[in-house]
Amino acid sequence: MADQFKRFDMKAPPVRQRNYLRPLLWALTIPNVILKGTKITKQGCDGLKPPYLLLCNHNAFYDFSVATKAIFPARANYVVAIDGFIGREWLLRNVGGICKRKFTNDIQLIRQIRQVFKNGDVLILYPEARYSLCGTTAVLPDSLGKLCRSMGVPVVTLICHGHHLQSPFWNLKKRKVRGLCAEMKLLYTPEQLKETPVDEINRTIREAFVYDDFAWQKENGIRITEKFRAEGLHRVLYQCPACGREYRMASAGTEIFCKACGKRWQMTELGTLEAVSGETEFSHIPDWYEWQRANVRREVEEGTYFWSGPCHVNSLPNARRYIPLGDGVLTHSMEGFEVHGEGSYGPYEMKLSARELYSCHIEYNYLGKFGDCVDLNTLQDTFYTYPHGEDFSVTKMALATEELYYHYHPEKIR
Ligand SMILES: [Zn+2]
Image (cartoon, rainbow, N blue to C red; front, side, top):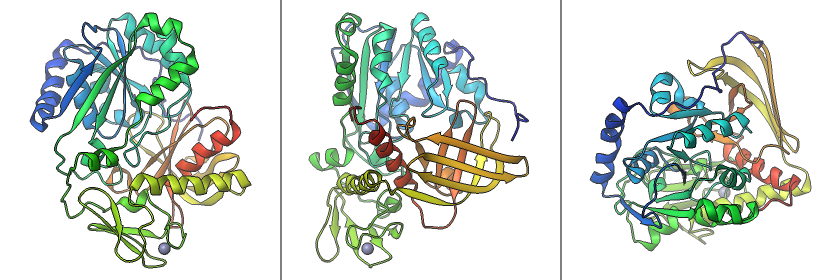
């Protein structure tokens, strides 16, 4: 696939939110936050004025509405992934969107961020760079501490609770969740940043980002009564803790079950799991998820981690439309990702080294019709890679990406 497609302009300077669009932006977001009764508490934010950096956790589109209300009436720019720009590039740029391809080291972005602060605005960053898979913190990049230190503006966090429960990544269908809340907290003043080593900044940010929506649900006794509440959960919980089989989990109604051994678990109104018969291996969903991670880590440590199979690939060189590159082969091994194939635009290939990729983005049933995919990025292109069949889990590939990175970089803090 030579350069027959126009590439997205990643270097475009950030646009200051157009004045005429700001009331529209407020009208589309703030009343909804008030209507839902989302409570935003602030700590250390008296007298806080832009420019500042706002680091937010990421669980749903609603995060963006809460952030808009939290910083009101300040002007902001947002770092947005390229697929968010499809078909609405003009609008996104003019409400302050800065485009980035996920999990790439983009030096250009640093320059754009600096410009935002020079403009005197707020930069809203979702450093997890993806929606959390099961309502707990996703990996944060090590580059964050250095970024904070070099910008010389206050660093503020905004941690929302309950957004994953309301519209979980594994099934976006909305549930009624009362008591949503968010905490906005000044983490560092510019003076404090100067005196703090980068490692310590990273540690402090990690501590501030610890959250667990399912624990929060239980602590607050929040009941989710929707009858479809477990549907889709098998996309995250892909391995059966009873028989150990992978890729045979399924879900329906309020239950998740294993098609290999037949064991079933009920998802309660409080978001816990209970085995319909026999032992409950994990009542807390994130514990099941972390057990799967530990199993993947073992494969990585033994050097046996490997998956390969046929796939379909769509490319996104610009924000206009997906280009179907055709069928190919995806391999994820100890070396990283490799995808290659040949389609109507000629041969194509992408290789991403496990040593350089600290995490990756995945999608469950992308856009409601395309199935599960791994989203692989270089600075110039994005491949949406859809494995065929049922003997795979993009969740496992995401976990393996992270575990491989830590395997090759044991010095990195988690
Ligand atoms: Zn089983």
